[in-house]
Image (cartoon, rainbow, N blue to C red):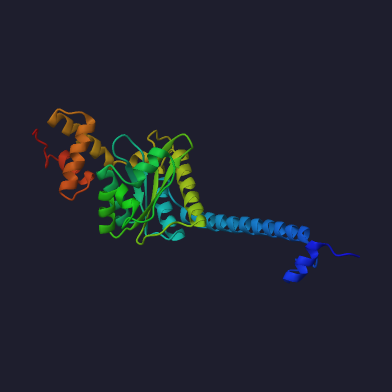
Length: 284
């Protein structure tokens, strides 16, 4: 039997195109590659499922026995255990300042308040566009140019990367889950999937758990109201500044933030002074 030119070239080059199954020829090679791709896809799917189950188990364990009002803080702690981050915080979106509900630590809580004071940062952008904002290097590059003041404040606090994930649905953003890292770096795909799972559970908690036990079985007060009570002072302070300066709400909030930043304070700290009449804003 005559041997075709293609087989001659194959033999001459030393490439017999045999597969692990003992076949030969280009067709068999393509089939083998296709099988390899299918196996790789199945392995990747198995890995994703294992990651999801592991994360789900840790979240369930972290939530065990939690009261409704404890859930945001518990989830922040679990996020730190699951991911290469040193802190996490959750904030509700609102007019003006975001409402920080809870955090994994005092340091994470402070970073959330820094963003609220500045009125700028990854969490503001994530809430506005309804998509994750991953500021992977606050020491150099485009993230510093995008948020120069926040980058300086964050790195001074020992945080060099911030990842903000929106909470809510495709049409409504109710807040953000903010993750803080002490070294620059990106979240890998599997880490980002885990972060998104925590954000999804946080969304369910914020939108589905309506009441806390401390309100009683017949209580009508939403359970979130107790978590955000300190922000009542902020909005009360804004109202007092409006009256003192005879300006609108946006201008009053801007003045509150400017004073806080100039004196290395948070907006909440200054708001408490205004409400307690220890600070009064005078017209220029």
